[in-house]
Figure 1 (cartoon, rainbow, N blue to C red):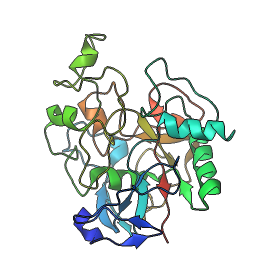
Figure 2 (figure 1 turned 90 degrees about the vertical axis):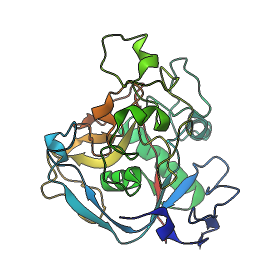
Figure 3 (figure 1 turned 135 degrees about the horizontal axis):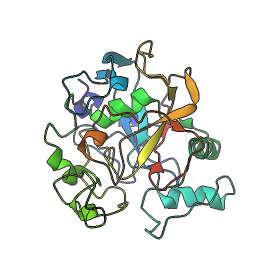
Length: 282
C-alpha cells in the first residue's frame, strides 16, 4: 500500500515542497493566493471498492479491483471553501451561491452542481496555467483511504468518526431524533470549517463527512469494466455523476471509503454538495 513516506524527503515540484517524511512547505502548496492548498499523493496501487463482508457494503461497490497510479498527483488538502469559491465569483467566472446562514469563509462551499465544479477547475487552470480538474472516482478513493483497507480510514470502529470528520452525530440528533446517526459528538450540526478534524495518513482532511464531493465519473451500476489506471470512467449514464465521502448528516455506513452515491443528477444543487480539486503534475 502507498504511504506518505513513499513520497520521500523534500522533492520540489514547481516550487512546492511535498508533504513527505518530516518536511512541509511553510507557505503551503498553492499556485496562487486564492487557490486551494494541495497535497501530493504518491504513485502506487490500491484495491478499489469493497466485498460483501464489509459493513454497509452495496452492490455498486463491487467487484473490488486493483487500480494502479503510475504517477503522483496533487489533490485538495481540503474541500473547496467559500473563500476560494467567492474569489472565482469576484472574477465573474463562477455563480454566487448561498450558505443557508451557516457561514462562509473556511466552510466548504455548498449548492455547487457538477458543471459548476468543473467550471471552477477550468477557471483555476486559466488563472494559473496549470491543469486543474475534478478528481476521478479512483483518485478520490485512493486519496481518501490514505493507504488503508479498512471501512473507514482510521480503522474498523465507526464511533471514532467524530475525531476525523463532521458526520451525522449526537449534536445533530437534537434536531433529528429519529435519524440513524453516529454515537459520538463532533460539535457541529451542519457544515464545519475545513480542517476542523484529524487528517488521514496522506495529510488530507474531510474526506469523511462535511459535504459530499463530486467526482468526474459517469454512473455505472457496478465496477465491471472500470478503468484500472486511475482515469475517470466517462461512459455509462453521464447525466448522473458520482458523489463520494458523505456529508454532515450521514450515518456510519454512508461515510465509508468505498461508499459511492448511486449517481446524482449533474445539475443538482443543495446544501450537502461540494467538491475538491485535483492538479496534474509533470
